[in-house]
Image 1 (cartoon, one colour):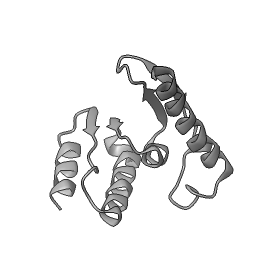
Image 2 (cartoon, one colour):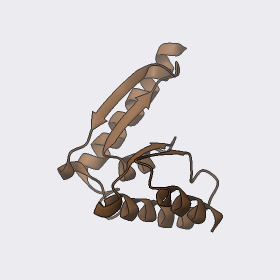
Image 3 (tube, helix red, strand yellow):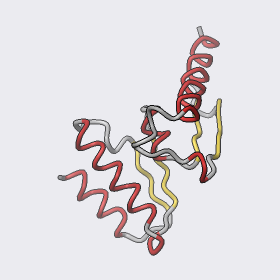
Image 4 (cartoon, one colour):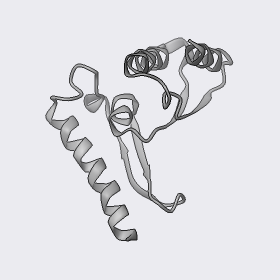
Length: 121
């Protein structure tokens, strides 16, 4: 409940940019899904359009919430992957685990991360 209040408070500040750094990192899966849906609904509200920088280490969460995914490598200043998703590739909870495009994107993201790890060994 505290996390929901913090998110609502952040959106109510009416700032055009919102930074969310691992906001769902320490909560259970059901609450996490509910909060993800809350973020999607708040983001889709035309009256309060905001730019949201959402930092996560969860590939599936990034795919679900993003309209652009930027992956930072082990050297934090290095971008190893940058993809802007168009409206036709926006994922939903219903298609997240069975849509061919989503599975290919997840595999590509994990591959890029693993390649960066392998290059640093």
